[in-house]
Image (tube, rainbow, N blue to C red; front, side):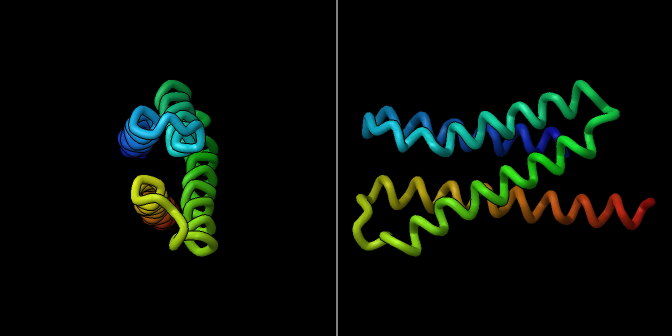
Length: 114
């Protein structure tokens, strides 16, 4: 699961940095910030095998918050967003929600195997 987390982290960082280069808005970097946190969790989970379980739980919390933030923004002001902001928020929501679902499945598999 750490490698999958790293892949989603890179995708979020690409989403945020590309949106920043297009718009020059610092808020466009929010997906990159979540990606950076996931990158740290995934990288540390690979290096420190004994802490993998805890780090993947932290990554799940980051993914949850990364899904809730754009969901709230979309619920409040989706109609007033620019097309770029709308696509970045939807992209972050989809990426983080998908990662969270994959992590929950992995946690269930690990629990059943134990």
